Length: 200
Image (cartoon, rainbow, N blue to C red; front, side, top):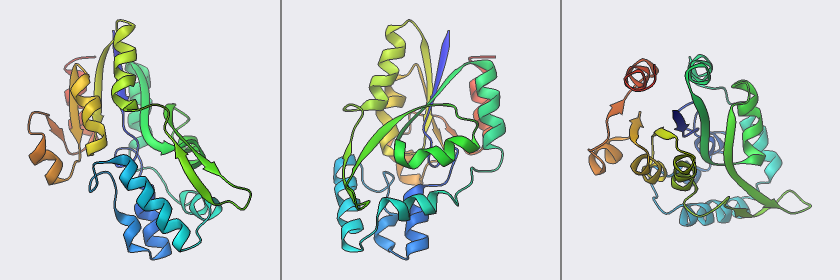
């Protein structure tokens, strides 16, 4: 029995913070887990920039409302839900994800949350648990499932390493170079072909 665990941003939808950077013109917000491996360092960096520019949760939610999933992403998630148990394991936040999940017909999502004050200022972030992607895989394995996991960034690596099968999906070259042991899929057709070796 298999479970498929997937990242969200960069896999099914564009990177939220990159889109915030484009719309606000704040170039520093373009950095993601593809660039900075330490998630706490990255998030503290982002929160400081939001404060510097007085950006509130409403500003970011406004950007997210304009983001659409990648072409064929919905069809691919629909296929996944037919052939296996499927969960998205993301380092995004409940307060960000809702418009994106709506467009993907609300697959099961595990992610983090934000602390927000009355003015809409994001004051902190709350991890669901330390190393949540790896621990999600471990939890399914403790229930006697085998796990196939895929993602595109450094923050997905522990999930891929823990899974029975780990796949890099459209990763940057630096991630490929650092983790050559994982197969690489550059589009949904290639990813489906790998998954079908195990599930279908």
